[in-house]
Length: 241
Ligand code: PGA
Image (cartoon, rainbow, N blue to C red):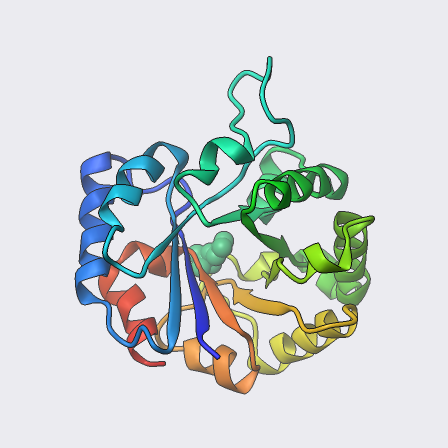
Protein backbone atom coordinates (compact mmCIF):
# COMPACT_ATOMS: atom_id res chain seq x y z
CA UNK A 1 0.00 0.00 0.00
CA UNK A 2 1.42 3.41 -0.98
CA UNK A 3 1.93 5.94 1.79
CA UNK A 4 0.10 9.24 1.24
CA UNK A 5 2.42 12.20 1.76
CA UNK A 6 0.52 15.48 1.79
CA UNK A 7 2.16 18.92 1.80
CA UNK A 8 0.12 21.61 3.51
CA UNK A 9 1.78 24.83 2.39
CA UNK A 10 -0.70 26.92 4.42
CA UNK A 11 -0.36 30.62 3.43
CA UNK A 12 3.06 30.09 1.81
CA UNK A 13 5.12 30.87 -0.18
CA UNK A 14 4.51 34.58 -0.69
CA UNK A 15 4.60 34.71 -4.49
CA UNK A 16 3.60 32.62 -7.47
CA UNK A 17 7.20 32.59 -8.67
CA UNK A 18 8.32 31.02 -5.40
CA UNK A 19 5.40 28.59 -5.44
CA UNK A 20 6.29 27.41 -8.93
CA UNK A 21 9.92 27.08 -8.03
CA UNK A 22 9.15 25.00 -4.90
CA UNK A 23 6.74 22.84 -6.87
CA UNK A 24 9.25 22.27 -9.67
CA UNK A 25 12.01 21.30 -7.25
CA UNK A 26 9.74 18.72 -5.66
CA UNK A 27 8.66 17.46 -9.08
CA UNK A 28 12.25 17.19 -10.28
CA UNK A 29 13.51 15.38 -7.22
CA UNK A 30 10.70 12.88 -6.89
CA UNK A 31 11.59 9.25 -6.79
CA UNK A 32 10.09 6.31 -4.96
CA UNK A 33 6.68 7.01 -6.39
CA UNK A 34 5.87 3.34 -6.26
CA UNK A 35 5.87 3.80 -2.48
CA UNK A 36 4.25 7.21 -2.18
CA UNK A 37 1.24 9.11 -3.35
CA UNK A 38 2.21 12.78 -3.18
CA UNK A 39 -0.34 15.56 -2.75
CA UNK A 40 0.60 19.25 -2.66
CA UNK A 41 -1.89 21.69 -1.17
CA UNK A 42 -0.95 25.29 -2.00
CA UNK A 43 -3.02 28.45 -1.40
CA UNK A 44 -6.08 28.77 -3.70
CA UNK A 45 -4.52 31.37 -6.00
CA UNK A 46 -1.71 29.01 -7.03
CA UNK A 47 -3.93 26.00 -7.77
CA UNK A 48 -4.46 26.73 -11.44
CA UNK A 49 -0.80 27.36 -12.28
CA UNK A 50 0.49 24.43 -10.27
CA UNK A 51 -2.09 22.18 -11.83
CA UNK A 52 -0.54 23.06 -15.20
CA UNK A 53 2.93 22.24 -13.88
CA UNK A 54 1.82 18.91 -12.46
CA UNK A 55 1.06 17.55 -15.92
CA UNK A 56 3.19 14.50 -16.69
CA UNK A 57 4.12 14.12 -13.05
CA UNK A 58 2.35 11.92 -10.56
CA UNK A 59 1.84 14.70 -8.04
CA UNK A 60 -1.74 15.45 -7.07
CA UNK A 61 -2.96 18.89 -6.14
CA UNK A 62 -5.19 19.64 -3.17
CA UNK A 63 -6.85 22.72 -1.71
CA UNK A 64 -6.77 23.75 1.94
CA UNK A 65 -10.45 24.54 2.33
CA UNK A 66 -13.72 25.00 0.44
CA UNK A 67 -17.17 26.39 1.16
CA UNK A 68 -20.38 24.39 1.63
CA UNK A 69 -22.50 26.27 -0.93
CA UNK A 70 -22.29 25.78 -4.67
CA UNK A 71 -22.42 29.47 -5.70
CA UNK A 72 -24.01 32.77 -4.71
CA UNK A 73 -23.55 35.80 -2.49
CA UNK A 74 -20.76 34.51 -0.23
CA UNK A 75 -18.04 37.10 -0.59
CA UNK A 76 -14.58 35.65 -0.37
CA UNK A 77 -15.63 32.02 -0.42
CA UNK A 78 -14.71 29.31 -2.94
CA UNK A 79 -16.88 26.30 -3.70
CA UNK A 80 -15.88 22.65 -4.00
CA UNK A 81 -16.94 22.53 -7.64
CA UNK A 82 -14.77 25.59 -8.42
CA UNK A 83 -11.64 23.88 -7.16
CA UNK A 84 -12.52 20.49 -8.60
CA UNK A 85 -11.00 21.30 -11.99
CA UNK A 86 -7.59 21.84 -10.35
CA UNK A 87 -7.65 19.47 -7.39
CA UNK A 88 -8.14 15.89 -6.40
CA UNK A 89 -8.08 16.51 -2.64
CA UNK A 90 -9.24 19.12 -0.17
CA UNK A 91 -8.11 19.58 3.44
CA UNK A 92 -11.06 20.30 5.73
CA UNK A 93 -11.35 21.16 9.41
CA UNK A 94 -7.70 22.05 9.92
CA UNK A 95 -7.12 23.22 13.49
CA UNK A 96 -6.01 26.64 12.25
CA UNK A 97 -9.40 27.06 10.58
CA UNK A 98 -11.15 25.88 13.72
CA UNK A 99 -9.06 28.30 15.81
CA UNK A 100 -8.92 31.47 13.67
CA UNK A 101 -12.24 31.17 11.83
CA UNK A 102 -14.25 29.37 14.51
CA UNK A 103 -15.13 26.50 12.19
CA UNK A 104 -17.44 24.04 13.89
CA UNK A 105 -17.89 20.31 13.31
CA UNK A 106 -21.30 21.06 11.78
CA UNK A 107 -19.81 23.48 9.25
CA UNK A 108 -17.04 21.03 8.47
CA UNK A 109 -19.71 18.37 7.83
CA UNK A 110 -21.45 20.64 5.30
CA UNK A 111 -18.14 21.23 3.58
CA UNK A 112 -17.38 17.51 3.58
CA UNK A 113 -20.70 16.73 1.95
CA UNK A 114 -20.14 19.27 -0.80
CA UNK A 115 -16.58 18.12 -1.38
CA UNK A 116 -17.76 14.51 -1.70
CA UNK A 117 -20.61 15.50 -4.02
CA UNK A 118 -18.08 17.28 -6.21
CA UNK A 119 -15.87 14.20 -6.39
CA UNK A 120 -13.07 15.56 -4.21
CA UNK A 121 -11.27 13.44 -1.64
CA UNK A 122 -11.58 15.23 1.70
CA UNK A 123 -8.72 15.10 4.18
CA UNK A 124 -10.52 15.65 7.48
CA UNK A 125 -8.28 17.01 10.24
CA UNK A 126 -8.98 16.16 13.85
CA UNK A 127 -6.93 16.52 17.00
CA UNK A 128 -6.94 17.59 20.62
CA UNK A 129 -5.47 20.78 22.07
CA UNK A 130 -2.78 20.74 24.73
CA UNK A 131 -5.34 21.61 27.40
CA UNK A 132 -7.65 18.79 26.30
CA UNK A 133 -4.75 16.35 26.30
CA UNK A 134 -3.67 17.39 29.80
CA UNK A 135 -7.25 16.97 31.00
CA UNK A 136 -7.23 13.41 29.64
CA UNK A 137 -9.89 14.27 27.06
CA UNK A 138 -8.11 13.20 23.88
CA UNK A 139 -10.39 10.27 23.05
CA UNK A 140 -13.50 12.23 23.91
CA UNK A 141 -12.48 15.09 21.61
CA UNK A 142 -11.53 12.83 18.71
CA UNK A 143 -14.77 10.89 18.99
CA UNK A 144 -16.86 14.07 19.06
CA UNK A 145 -15.05 15.54 16.05
CA UNK A 146 -15.55 12.34 14.07
CA UNK A 147 -19.14 11.73 15.09
CA UNK A 148 -20.30 15.30 14.51
CA UNK A 149 -18.51 15.89 11.28
CA UNK A 150 -19.49 12.56 9.74
CA UNK A 151 -23.08 12.48 10.96
CA UNK A 152 -25.48 11.28 8.27
CA UNK A 153 -22.69 10.78 5.74
CA UNK A 154 -23.15 7.43 4.03
CA UNK A 155 -20.77 4.53 4.68
CA UNK A 156 -19.79 4.57 1.04
CA UNK A 157 -18.82 8.24 1.24
CA UNK A 158 -17.04 7.79 4.56
CA UNK A 159 -14.81 5.22 2.91
CA UNK A 160 -13.58 7.94 0.51
CA UNK A 161 -12.47 10.28 3.30
CA UNK A 162 -8.90 10.44 4.59
CA UNK A 163 -8.53 11.30 8.28
CA UNK A 164 -5.55 13.33 9.48
CA UNK A 165 -4.76 13.02 13.17
CA UNK A 166 -3.08 16.29 14.07
CA UNK A 167 -2.59 16.92 17.79
CA UNK A 168 -2.93 20.70 17.89
CA UNK A 169 -0.06 21.10 20.37
CA UNK A 170 2.30 19.36 17.93
CA UNK A 171 1.51 21.59 14.95
CA UNK A 172 4.31 23.97 14.03
CA UNK A 173 5.94 23.57 17.43
CA UNK A 174 8.72 21.11 16.71
CA UNK A 175 7.18 19.20 19.60
CA UNK A 176 6.04 16.15 17.65
CA UNK A 177 3.77 13.62 19.30
CA UNK A 178 5.52 10.51 20.64
CA UNK A 179 5.22 7.39 18.52
CA UNK A 180 3.45 5.57 21.33
CA UNK A 181 0.91 8.32 21.85
CA UNK A 182 0.25 8.68 18.12
CA UNK A 183 -0.12 4.90 17.77
CA UNK A 184 -2.73 4.89 20.53
CA UNK A 185 -4.63 7.75 18.91
CA UNK A 186 -4.52 6.01 15.54
CA UNK A 187 -5.83 2.77 17.01
CA UNK A 188 -8.60 4.65 18.75
CA UNK A 189 -9.61 6.51 15.58
CA UNK A 190 -9.65 3.24 13.62
CA UNK A 191 -11.91 1.70 16.24
CA UNK A 192 -14.54 4.37 15.56
CA UNK A 193 -15.02 3.13 12.00
CA UNK A 194 -16.66 -0.10 10.95
CA UNK A 195 -14.39 -0.46 7.93
CA UNK A 196 -10.82 0.50 7.09
CA UNK A 197 -10.17 4.22 6.86
CA UNK A 198 -6.90 5.85 5.87
CA UNK A 199 -5.33 7.83 8.69
CA UNK A 200 -2.47 10.31 8.35
CA UNK A 201 -0.33 11.82 11.09
CA UNK A 202 0.37 15.56 11.15
CA UNK A 203 2.24 17.80 13.59
CA UNK A 204 5.95 18.63 13.25
CA UNK A 205 6.49 15.65 10.94
CA UNK A 206 9.84 15.75 9.14
CA UNK A 207 12.40 13.48 7.51
CA UNK A 208 13.84 12.47 10.90
CA UNK A 209 10.63 11.22 12.47
CA UNK A 210 8.59 10.25 9.39
CA UNK A 211 9.42 6.55 9.46
CA UNK A 212 8.39 6.27 13.11
CA UNK A 213 4.88 7.44 12.30
CA UNK A 214 4.58 5.52 9.06
CA UNK A 215 5.95 2.17 10.12
CA UNK A 216 5.99 2.05 13.92
CA UNK A 217 2.75 3.86 14.60
CA UNK A 218 1.39 2.43 11.33
CA UNK A 219 -0.11 5.57 9.85
CA UNK A 220 -1.11 5.49 6.17
CA UNK A 221 0.65 8.75 5.48
CA UNK A 222 1.64 12.19 6.72
CA UNK A 223 0.26 15.71 6.55
CA UNK A 224 3.36 17.87 6.48
CA UNK A 225 3.31 21.62 7.15
CA UNK A 226 6.60 23.42 7.84
CA UNK A 227 8.80 20.66 6.46
CA UNK A 228 6.97 20.75 3.12
CA UNK A 229 8.23 24.27 2.43
CA UNK A 230 11.73 22.97 1.83
CA UNK A 231 11.91 20.70 -1.20
CA UNK A 232 14.97 18.99 0.29
CA UNK A 233 13.20 18.18 3.53
CA UNK A 234 9.95 17.14 1.83
CA UNK A 235 11.77 14.96 -0.69
CA UNK A 236 13.77 13.52 2.21
CA UNK A 237 10.55 12.16 3.68
CA UNK A 238 9.59 10.52 0.39
CA UNK A 239 13.06 9.13 -0.33
CA UNK A 240 13.14 7.35 3.02
CA UNK A 241 10.02 5.30 2.34
P1 PGA B 1 3.52 21.25 10.83
O1 PGA B 1 2.01 21.48 10.33
O2 PGA B 1 4.07 20.08 10.05
O3 PGA B 1 4.23 22.55 10.50
O4 PGA B 1 3.47 20.98 12.27
C1 PGA B 1 1.18 20.39 10.04
C2 PGA B 1 -0.19 20.89 9.68
O5 PGA B 1 -0.63 21.91 10.24
O6 PGA B 1 -0.88 20.31 8.84
